[in-house]
Length: 417
Image (cartoon, rainbow, N blue to C red; front, side):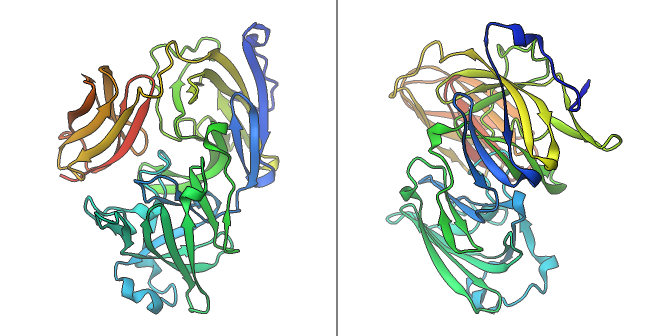
């Protein structure tokens, strides 16, 4: 059943004594701005969506570099011969280059620069892990990137070591050539450090990690591996878990629902465009439950979308549970150290540690969010190992999620039988 946005939404929940709030954000015409939002505090900050080109992930064991694909940035893998950097002088042969895209389901496990289809377990797409003592990733691939301003650059990610990326890019005619040193630890409490390749400046555009739950933005989605296209929607912060329930908001309940840590669970599919009537519609039987990092649970549903004319998005939020029934202490945590072997031909071992004996669940998702494997296990204090078997699953890249009902941790797994 569809609800047309030209109607006024009236809900019986208006008259509830629960903590219910109607709110909205305005991304501006043509969705110009990105908006970071907290369910507790409302809108946190607003930045131009075109203020960055690439973003460097702030995590020691990751080499992810994301592109601003939703705003028109494009990336191609050109050659694995890094000696050819100066010899790439035009876009002749572009039809043979491999286009690369960010994952729309996870922040770090499959960024555009991390295309690992040709590499082994030590391959990070743009470079190879060298091992001890430096534990660096050294560049092994040349790319071409088109910026938001339609400028083409050739790119060589020289290395990452001790949290510092060395990132070189040059114009195709070699008249401009620069190397940016990006120290992601300098961006304390942020997920990414951002670089604008149109004005060659680093951008501190993201609020502190603990200050926001969602980002309203434009991003690229993968349609079943067939096509990639930009959408306007909602992506969630790391550590935020979301359950999608196909029920009217008045009837929906989070008990028994599956909470996922994937960043686009809300995404863009809560709205559709009615071409016949030239207007956006939404389903009135779609409700989201959001578990924040503070373990508060909110009920969220959308009540309006005005499209590119204003970029206004309207929604209702309701605090339905404040904090977990038992908040985990700081030393009660899980840490997924490694998945081995990775890539795997079928089975793999999850090596992880736990600060207590407890029940754990293992879930494996495809990059479009489909659950392909799940199992439960009882862990012991200290180091643990759990084997998963994906022998009946198709080849591809998957997200392995280990959780205990309160905390989850996710890593990427490549299946290549």
